[in-house]
Length: 130
Image 1 (spheres, helix red, strand yellow):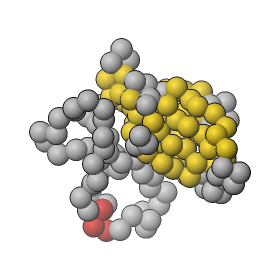
Image 2 (cartoon, helix red, strand yellow):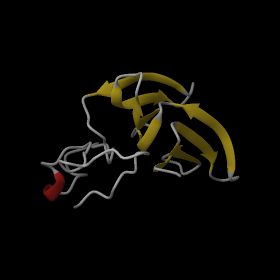
Image 3 (cartoon, one colour):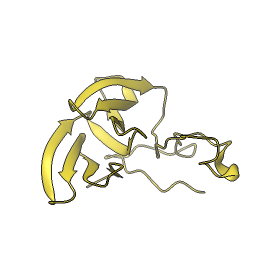
Image 4 (cartoon, one colour):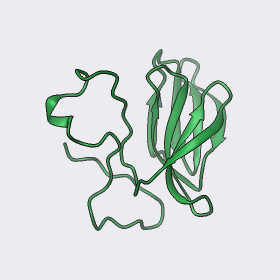
């Protein structure tokens, strides 16, 4: 199953997360270009505003639990990871103070599930209430 999708800013590449990997797709020719191993399980994904990096929520039992992995899109290598999240449900970028509606400015950029949400089997992100 696919848990996260993100397009490059030019729309030519699609990044899909599934079974611990990011699948890189040429969206113009409908071809799989690469599979990048990230962690045991993967979830939401986002492309940085400048298009150089991919941010992928993932879970690794041997790698310290849940993190947001930073992938360099030119080399397709993991640059590092951000820790301190439960199970991120959404990743978004804020490029200016006006690109986020007033009603969302006080909410976190990486949102997490409600208290009491349990991990059961595969990680299946749920829609975030807005």
